[in-house]
Length: 194
Image (tube, rainbow, N blue to C red; front, side, top):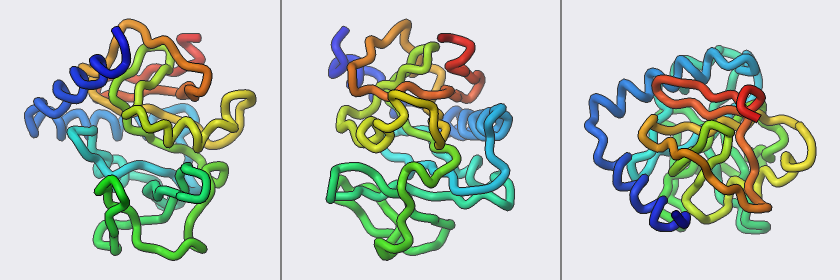
């Protein structure tokens, strides 16, 4: 199955989830993210603003260790990658060109991808081998392309619902593999499935 029909079906399935199931999955994902063997106790970590039925990360954000700074992605037009800005609930936001809220901060407050300890990335689909199917824009793949050829911070964790698992995805040459995938009930570590 090609990516576009697959994306369409998976996006419809995650949008159809009941609110209670969505919240339970968010709590489960928080447990799994905090239990990862490489879960940081300090430093900058990044999540995302949940849109289009994506799994919300509020439970994880509120339970992070005190030494961690939660960040949200910001579109960086200079090279079509992402930068990351510290954000707390209630802090100012502005919508980017896709209508996704971003922290309303100066460029000086933005962090580069290699300054983060861990990134929880949204996904449309995934397989048990750490392959992630995104929305198709390539933002995360371009941003973390430096991770393709050598292990370097940050750790990359795909986050989604159990129903987004597929048997196998065929990665493209530009796809960046996740170090782990967390759902509400399970964690797939790439080192265990390689």
